[in-house]
View (cartoon, rainbow, N blue to C red):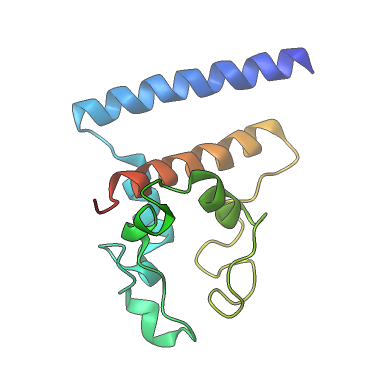
Length: 136
């Protein structure tokens, strides 16, 4: 257990360094890429809830750029994480089944450590991007 915890912590630190370096150099924005691949079809390229799939949904997608504004100016990281990974249910009818068609199982942690780390990295990148696009 201790060895796996050390491995996980080391991996997260290494990824943070690589991600921040890549972001600083302007090469890849993993969070934005994740958003475009998994969220933009419903929430829109601008994240304002105006995605192409909007007309097919029973409830309009949320404007993701005002999450912090609706939470007293603080981006709700923990809540957003739990909605994405399935621990917190969203308003009934807004997303249909828990397994969102666009997401499938990509944000579900597996029983194996590499899959869990992969899912957590993707969610973390996505949340970082969403936090950066919040309106003031």
